Length: 135
Ligand code: TYD
View (cartoon, rainbow, N blue to C red):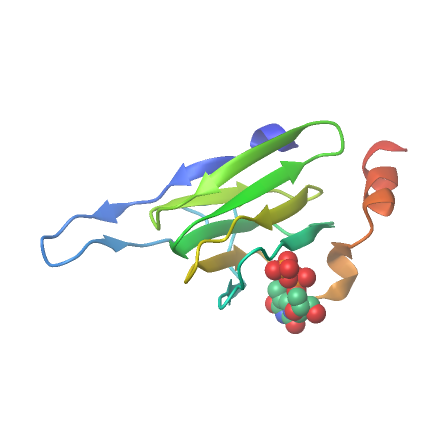
């Protein structure tokens, strides 16, 4: 549910020569990583997301720059601003997400619990709402 979605502070190894952050399957995050993807070269004003996943767990990290992610379980919405590479937003299954307000040069990285399959997506909000709330 929406309450399970949260900002996770990742380990950060401070060093005057540069900081380091690491993420391991199942330890800092509540799932095993099967896939990594990233979104970059996002033009000003672009909006991404606009879908929900049936079973996929994700951790979203702003590797560079910043953006806003609005999560929506069909009843409540919460917006998170991601701007630091040692914070990740954990998004559980069955949550609609919209991502916007990308700064120029931003890179959005996603760690995902499964490989890509279009069958795992709800791309229509009404279909998502029906599946989520009408039982
Ligand atoms: P989508 O998940 O809709 O992107 P976003 O949520 O960032 O707007 O994916 C965009 C396109 O890329 C879509 O046609 C599916 C394809 N795609 C893959 O082939 N593999 C992947 O791992 C991902 C995430 C997307």
